[in-house]
Image 1: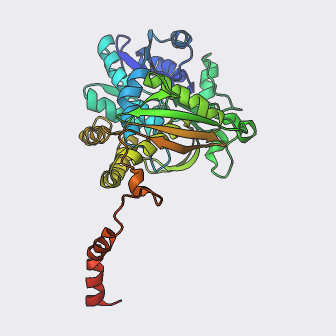
Image 2 (image 1 turned 180 degrees about the vertical axis):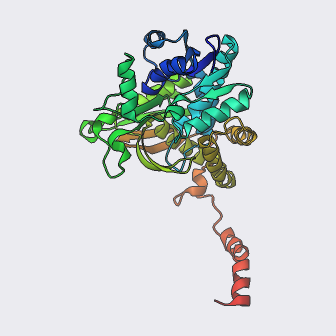
Image 3 (image 1 turned 135 degrees about the vertical axis):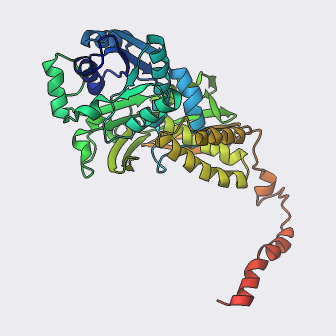
Length: 400
């Protein structure tokens, strides 16, 4: 059993699991708890969050503004890699965990803690991401996972909160577990655990439903430099501000609702509902910018790297050598990705309707079928003959 002098730094969100965890860590192990919150775009009132943690029993509460760091060091590489797990999930939660783990370790050093803690369950992916990230950065620190240890049902957890006068956002009527940051919002629990049930409109917060979509739609223009979006509609913005602004406008048109049957790292399938209006819009625009400025062979090879990157991030290996190598490759590919992309946001879709670049590989004089055509069509005859030689040899030698 830990003594009262021993300290643990808890990744604190203010939700049900981590609010209950403060009291549980104190009562079960005698820890002094430092509640650490890293604002990645979802914290509306940092002072209220700190006050709540202290009221529950934490000895200290810290809120770190990690939005700029998250955008520059985590979301930018993910955007370079058009990272989508199983080709759909933009990895918002998976990208956040290694950054939070980094700040957990820093806080543990500052407060002289012997351990860090998180509110992840024993059947989720995030426990892996936290545990492995901490082991990568500070193998001497212990990792405590209260939710994994107590193994209560959601109802039992809420009963514990009520018995200890812990205010939590979840109720029996609205039992969703929500995680949100700049890149997306995940919603789990309740009726969503039945994959036959359509997600209730009440579970969404960032995206409008069909009945609220503006009939006329809306166009936006995104400008990229070295693969990074730097302007929205001609206005330069810090990246974290641009992501928020894109998410707000795309969300009004219902862009970014995802309902997936996802294969978790721990070996089970899970029904996952996400809202990712900014991520879906920006990845679509980035792909269009790349298609205009990158050559065919690089685009083809990069597609395989993108899949590996998404899997590696999802599996919690952000601080591993493979991720470092993948990100170095991706950064090199982005040097010429400088373009403007115009999108129409309408009826739940973000559709690319225009793109242009001073570094474009598209040449009208080669692509046109009209006047000014500079393509040497006569050269195609020899090219086709040589290109088809292997097939001709196979047909002559093997027949059909």
